[in-house]
Image 1 (cartoon, rainbow, N blue to C red):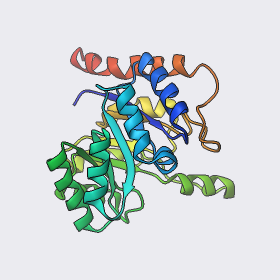
Image 2 (cartoon, helix red, strand yellow):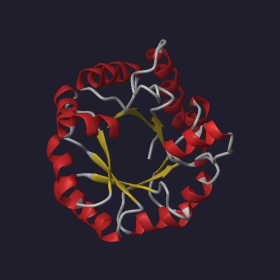
Image 3 (cartoon, rainbow, N blue to C red):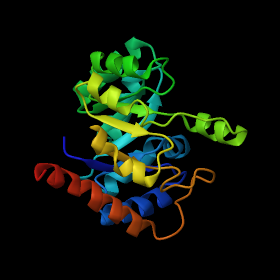
Image 4 (cartoon, rainbow, N blue to C red):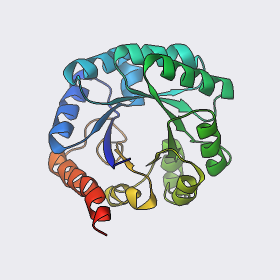
Length: 234
């Protein structure tokens, strides 16, 4: 697939999510993500509000489903989501039921390998269970406490090529990347570039990052969207 830029709206209020989403779309972002903090704070209403405001834009509901997969996926689809996230650590039956709901309600399913004992094998398992995408994810809390304690922690780039080579579905890398690293994930074969905390969202307050974020996003989008043309031209 062609490279896509997704912004994770890891915010806690609908008005701020709508304002940030509008700015991001002006800058060239392709997909919006109703981040986990937004879903916890606002529930399905956060997804509904994004769908009402942006009727044609793909919306990822980062629900991090662990159980009750069919109903939760159905609720997100009916609220207007186009994609939903299920955790690889969930029971395989949960992943299967999310996939079933996806087929019945027109959702694409993103399987998240966060915390799986073997990230590569976990990615393969998610694909085998029917996920349309794999998210290779290094945990926020792991990164936060490791940094506080001066302990090295992995980067999503460490195993990214191995994961891309192990599956036949598109891959997204999340967790602790710099803006420069995030822009380079298509070089690893991972076309879904996601921007959230701490790149565009303050990771402590879960508020939109300060500064000229629109200009930064536009630069990122221009770079990522140019990737397909650059590769065509060698």
